[in-house]
Length: 128
Image (cartoon, rainbow, N blue to C red; front, side, top):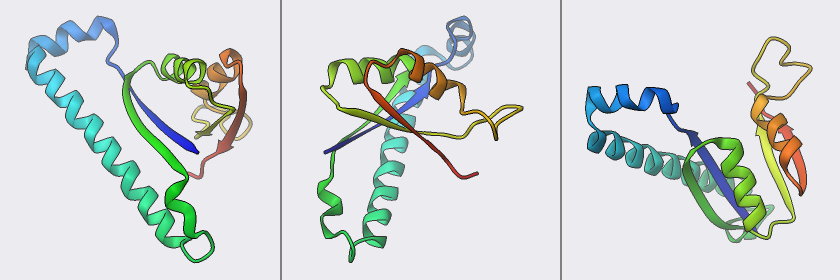
């Protein structure tokens, strides 16, 4: 089975006071929850489209995904925590490789996960 995790980076601690002051803490929490729901909907829609596209060759496509999770926080910490507590065999993650030498290196999140993860990690270069 496959578990899908998407982490939306939290606003830095120093900026939270500013954000709460501008829009209010309750409104901020509401926006975060709405963003989390939007991310889940997007992932589910893309997964449905993928399964529709490969349906003839892979009819059991829809049975592969066990859970889809969206979290708000530090992406590296959330990924490492999920891997440490979830009983997974391997982590597969995409990398855009943003940066000056993006063709030669993977993204900083992928690199930090690779350094810290105690399980096997497969990093896939994502198309631009």
